[in-house]
Amino acid sequence: MFKTRKVRPDLLHEGHPRGDKNSPQRTYTSTDVAKIAQVSLRQLQWWDERKVVSPRHEGHKRIYLPEEVIEITVIAELRRKGFSLQKIRRVLRFLQREMGRRLADVFSSDSKLHLLTDGKSIFLEDQQDRIIDLLKNARQPMFLVCVSDQVRRLDEIPKKPNRSEGILAKRARAAV
Image 1 (cartoon, rainbow, N blue to C red):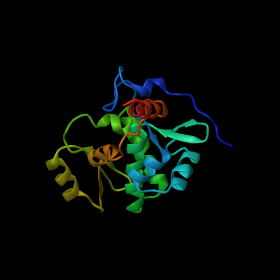
Image 2: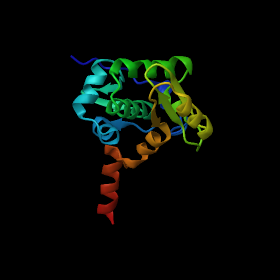
Image 3: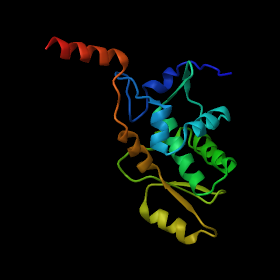
């Protein structure tokens, strides 16, 4: 029923604001992602089955990388604003194809980054003047998602120690 996926070593360390070659990139469980994106576990499963966002699988567990979590939070925001999954797929394809990178890779500075779309046109802007111009000149309603805020939400979930770290900490406390 479930296909297992290989670890993607190219995404584990390089070119990402949350990890480098010397430290492994943080990963998120389905429960963490559901809390961050404010969606149900079933919704995450459905998106994985439909290949909207496909995380790595370890047995029956889904393991999400930060860029996948950010994509999910943007998808969830657009769904709450009434966008169809078809239009959301178009937004994600645009960002992945035209920009040559994933959504999280676009975020590289402390500036506020916003995704604006009307379902047909898509803009990724970090300059407030440009955002205001786009909104003023739009011929139909534009929807705005602050990507920077989605990235900051990743830090709201405290990192849990892995099992071996927990055992070592417990033994250290017992030794004292």
